Image (cartoon, rainbow, N blue to C red; front, top):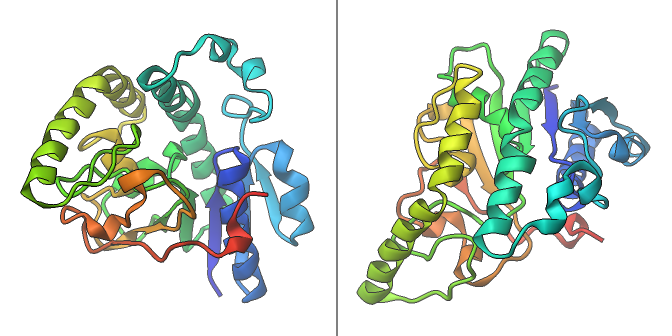
Length: 258
């Protein structure tokens, strides 16, 4: 029997797929603990799982975003909108998430930690060299793969796939534009992780999907049930993807948000 800690960013479309997997593991006899915000406690416990709450700092209601993030109503579209979520919603929650995980592991020595793509508080564990102490980490990709590659256009704008040398050249140009557009976000995220003694080894989108410095104890499973344009191609279609990454998708319809 394994001990498995699930950690989910508090969006319905992030909690639901992880909850489906967690229930299945519970049914197979594993000891399962599910970490997310209080809004989902009933859903977790009704599935026969033990619920643990995130602390107040990263707790918000995804149905009332402006209550937790007053600036949300004024956020623009395109890159501005995307950067808002990555900075304010995902990165700013990482330290509190990480510390909560560390506290839970003291009393629940998990064999594995399963988290969604943007639960960035799990990333410091993935980036820690395997030492026989930390749990194996498994990123369940509830978003289209974000790993930058010459083979497909970058995640976000919805650019259509273009095959051949022309497409790869275009993708290299778009990747460079992406790194420039998110340079401010990258700086902010690096600072967040530095506060807990963690060095981010590359671009945050790449690290969130596949922390490549960690070796055999980190896995990525992309199970997104839908996506836009080439971003929804499996991560394994990217020649830069390491062997630890797989795309057993599309996810079963039972995982899809209602």
